[in-house]
Length: 418
Image (cartoon, rainbow, N blue to C red; front, side, top):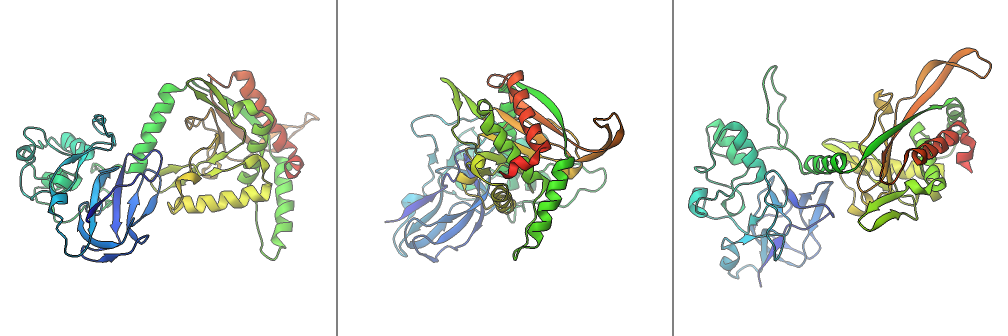
C-alpha cells in the first residue's frame, strides 16, 4: 500500500525543514534504512532514511524548499499501484487537533500535502487567501509585490521564495534558486534568504534577551603561569608517538567545569515550579559555523581530564562545522563557554543560552604593563572574563564567587591537572 513520507522532526526545536538534496529519483527502488534525502534542520544537515522498502513514486517537495514537520514530502509504494488518492491536495498541520501558529515569518506554518496543477493562481485555489511561505510573503512585502496574481511552484501550489524572486525579476522560475548569492556590487542592496539555523538563533536570542534579566560581571586573570604550564605540557605532548597540543581554550574549559562543580548554584535553570539545579556539569561550547552558531555539549565535563576535554571539544567542533552533529550532541547543556579571543576581541558580554543561567565570555590574551607584588611595572599577560548571569538564579555575590573560583584555578593552573 502506498504511503507518504513526511518531513521528520530531527531535532527537539525543529518546526520545519529544508530539503537539501534527494538521493533517489522518482521511479527508483528504495531499501528499508537506505538514505533517500538530506534534510537541513535548524542545527544540522541530516540524512533521511526510508522507513520501509518500495519505489519512490512521487517527490512532493523539490530540492531547496521548506516544509513544516509532518508535511508529506514524497510518496513510497509499489511500482504499479495507484497513488491518486495521495496526490489529492489537502491541508495538513503539524499540530493535530489545534490551529498551528500562523504568525508572519515564523516556522511551523501548515503546508499542502501535494502539488496541484501548475499555473492556477493562488486566489483561485483557496478563495481569497493566498497560500505562501513566510519567507515569500516577507520578500514580496519588501518588494511591493502583490501575491494574489502569482502562481506557486511549491507543495500544494504554495508560493515560495523563488516564485517571488522571479516575479520581481520579471520572468518565470526555471529552477530552484541557489542558497548562496554572488557578492553585491558596490552600492547595490541585497535581500538575502534566512536559513533555518539563523531563524532559530534569532528567535532564541530574542526570547533570551527579552525574558531573562541579564546582568554582567567582569574579572581580569593573570595568565602568566598558565602560559608557562601550557608550553611545558605541549613540549611533552609533542614527543608522544601521536603528538598532541593543548590550546589556551582547553584550560578555560577545564577551569569552567571545575568552578561549576565547586559553585554548583550557577549550574541551574529557571523552571515554572522552581529552580532546577543540575547534578552534572554538561558544558556547552559555542562554535562558529558558516551560517551562525551552534553549541555542542561536553557531557559530565567536571569528571574529565584536561586532555579528555581537549580531545572531545576538538572532535565536536570539527563535526559542528561540517553540520554533522546529532541532536543529543548539541542539546541539554547546563552552562556555556564562548571564546572570541582568537578574533582579537579583548572583552565582550554574551547572551545567555536558555534555559541556562550563565554563559562565560572569554576574551583575547593580551600583553600589558602591570604592577607586580614589589610595585614594579612589568610586562603582564592578562585575559578578561565576562559572566552573563540570570539574576533570577545567580545573584551578584554568587556570580562573583564563580568568577573568583575560575580566576584562582587559572592563576594556579597546576590544580587543573589533578
